[in-house]
Length: 296
Image (cartoon, rainbow, N blue to C red; front, side, top):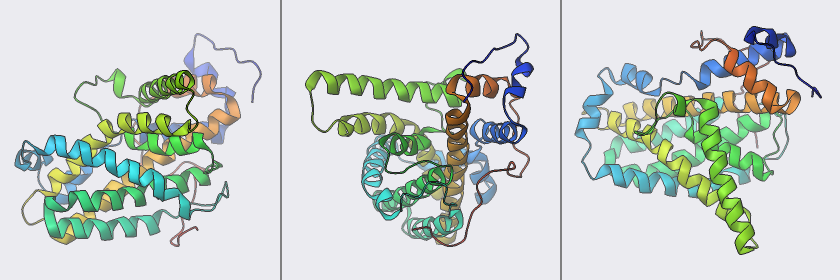
């Protein structure tokens, strides 16, 4: 890591502070994190604007989805990581997780909106396991509390709440908000002298993340509310859902890996100086490879 970094008035002057391959990885990460496009992808699958599905959701579903998403994240955080071995650098198994979540989506698509409370915790657990798998492939130790919190943070990425403006929905803006919630929870722990320090911090983080995750769950359920979606459509939508969060994880843990190497300040400066362009379809050189079999 560089001991000192000088930032020139010309933002492009700092690009040379990163090795070319690392700069390419950061560019790709930004293209993922700032241009998620989940709703657009779902629309292309169901063949109709997602707003039509939103109109079919009962008014009471907004509150219900909020409760279910927070519960799903809590359950997933307790179960998802226990079946992974803590081997930093091991390649991720994205395809296996996509298949698993497609199966749960097929069940949800067959039974419709009423299956949300059953299907979402299952699919969220599979997705969180996949997110942790990606984290591990980028050199993270999944036994670390910091890494576990970072995995939960992924579910807040790529989704805006109604109160967000463009500045508040950017990648680093979301991280700042989540970091504040962790700091507040940590202060509470210190004041109360609680023995289980990690618990209230994770509970506070999950509550914050659930608000943003719920926006994307609502889009998913709106698509499944379209008539004749059925089991096949539900499986396809869940596969898109998984792919979305795998990409958010890929971007998030690429940034964190570079932060460990170059420092948080420099990586953020370079990230913000890079052009805000959508990805062009291929992974940056050095990005993690996937395998079709599960890593245990």
